[in-house]
Image (cartoon, rainbow, N blue to C red; front, top):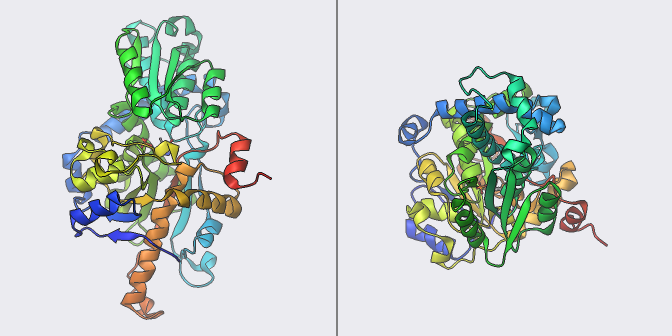
Length: 461
Ligand SMILES: *Cc1c(COP(=O)(O)O)cnc(C)c1O
């Protein structure tokens, strides 16, 4: 398998890493500041009790979600996505799981799974976790303040469901957000469904179909000529000037982060159902595309709370917008942006086109994250086509970045194994290599219009 990626192990020179980043070269970077989970935990601002609180709030709101979005009735108003094994994609990538030739019969562990947040209801992307959670938290605050809910834990499921009949009340309030796309969809769709005046500030490069969809759901879309940062700044200014308006701040939102973090325990339950054991011999590796960091960071935190050191988490970023890799590798976190090292921040992976990482998330990830991988834009469509061809699953280009660290680590292991021992000698030596269960986190795509999908897959003409 072709690799073509530079591997910076934990002992690498910081200067060399920064040089590769500035050169927009693909790299796999091991986080030298990572600590054992029990130690790292001590440095964190949030803990399992914060995740529990978020999970409880999502359960309280499930009756309302079910009423507003009947497509969630099967799960009783809980917004969750499937995990699917994708063995044919593993094959297409040249990755082998399990042992022996009759792998499907004899393997003792090791599988490639796709976590399909690309198919989450309501928003069609990972943003359905954090974005919707933040809107619900704000809604609960307002409802308690106004006496629509007691908020002391004694409210009935019916009381939450009845909030669907209070559009008159919520319409006096605004919810605003600046977004290149998916966060806007999630916040806009949810806020408009509850009855808020929903305003989404978008940069001009945001996809036309996302603007159309938002407007069809009753959200206002304001377009800006400048880039994403300009849209966010103006959205924040307008919202701050209005006491009846709430602004969702992608860069430093606690709610977003904790909403995402609830994914960890739910993933564990899904793995249990699939019969996937996670232990020393079968550790987990999870690959997640990273933009500002909220989604992958929150999910990483939730996963580490569940599995501790038995789970590795790797982020994937575009070579022109590696804001989290840059922040962590330089040690400057959100005190540096990709333009500072001469990169453009421009990428086809619109969900990941972020120049400066979240301060909150980069601080939390500093001693927790296993590493990052940067991905050239030219990799995205081939992964997308391969996944579609092998498994019939469509995810958006941004999501596909997560296949790159998987492929690169697979190649590095093969190279290691080849250098360590002759073929076949491994088993007698006690089979030292663990059998990883790899999870690629598909973060978006199911809301793409057919015509966009066909074009991306190269199916037009
Ligand atoms: C938003 C998004 C991400 C990354 O989330 P951040 O919170 O910005 O890091 C990844 N993939 C897709 C498809 C997204 O929309």
